[in-house]
Image (cartoon, rainbow, N blue to C red; front, top):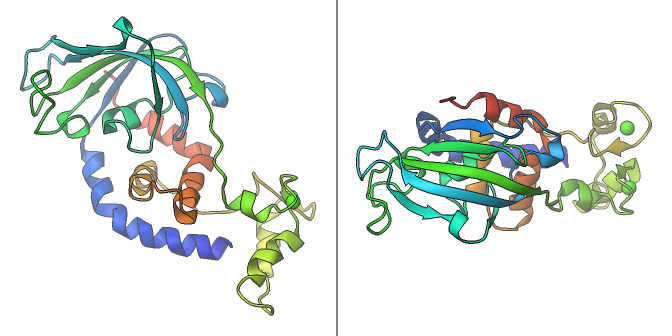
Length: 248
Ligand SMILES: [Ca+2]
Ligand SMILES: [Ca+2]
């Protein structure tokens, strides 16, 4: 189970390196100017969350194209926007810039063209090469739990993996296949004979790799779901992302 997953992920990491490096060179600026800057995990924006957002988009004063200060769109004149974060449905500046914000936070995102609408722009309102400024408010954060490998293994759905449940997985490889003896020893850190969701092992990955991989594997296949799960389960990734931002 663990070795299978590690192998697949290593291969994807190779594929995603070039794209991840490009993304790292682009800078998004995030300035939280009102509301909480710290909150419980459940209220913090994470990949896969469903958000209710208000926003006002203008051409940023630093933009090399367009008329700085011109407003091109605002949800304030309509209803709040409902979006799913982190799966490439939004411009990259939103997918990355909103991560880690708290419910109730108001923030300004300054999005370079590479993470916005690129060199082509959108219609007359957003010319190619425009740097965009979004004044956003996180109205609500709803956590969505996606089925993961752990769920697949946890046959009786009690949130714990017994050696028997793990063995079922390995037996799919063949009637004589066995569980690697070190697996329980390694994952069952509190030595109670079962593996909890928190104990369940797996590789840790840099945030940008996660984001790139989720873009590449956004389809709900076993691999796509595994990638989402690996990225979501590791809370330390979130801290890396937040501290990696450039403050205004
Ligand atoms: Ca179980
Ligand atoms: Ca345990």
